[in-house]
Each structure stands twice: as structure tokens, then as C-alpha cells.
Image (tube, rainbow, N blue to C red; front, side, top):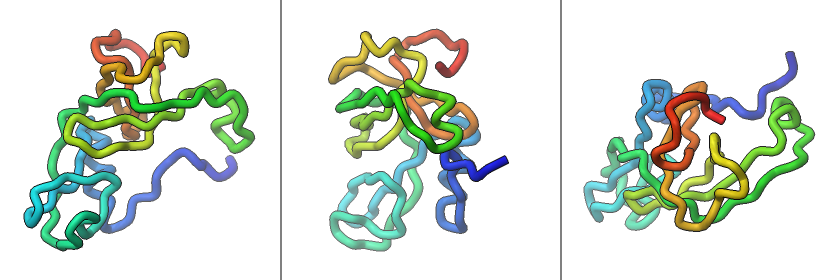
Length: 137
């Protein structure tokens, strides 16, 4: 099997994030100095540069900010998944996150769509809030 470009490689710092995602929990970083949360995980606050940051569970709620339906991607395994929806979502806690939208008809996508986190294969993705609990899309 060739290289997988869709699976994260956890390191000593991000292992906590990926272990939580495998349990269905989205973690953000919270700054104890300026009381802001940020994403993607960093060892310092990108606002005030403090190193007083800790992991904090997110609600898993978000709204769709923007998206693109990808019809062609030649990297494995993406070429077997097309079309898929690459997106940027606004997390309820404030930060924006790049992700994938699953389980939603492309015609139903709209800015501001209420979303919830799902974790197929331990990777955070989002679907329309209230969508069925069946497959991931």
C-alpha cells in the first residue's frame, strides 16, 4: 500500500489531541493569560505568545464558513473519495478550523449551516447538526 496522505502523524505534543479525537472529543488550546482559545494546536498562544496554554474540550458545534466541493484529487486515497467537501468552519468557541463536511448533500450546503463534529477513523470532520446517526457520509 502506498503512502496515506489523509492520516495524521501524532508527535509528542499532538498525541493528546489525536487520542481525544479517537474517543470522539475535539480539543482546543486555551490560554490562561489572555483567556482565549485557538486552533490549530500550538504550544504557545498565537495572540499573546504566552506558554500558559492547556487542552480544553470543545462543544463540537460549529457553523459552515466556506467550502469547496473537490471533484479531482490524484493523491491516494482522495481520488477514490471524490467528490468530497473541503471546508472552513467557525467553531462555537471562536476559532476557525479546516475540515471536511460529511453526510450532507452538496446542494444543502450554505454559509452559516449548523454543524456538529463527528470522528470517523479518529479524525474530526463535521456534518449538518441533527443529521442521522448512521454513516459518516
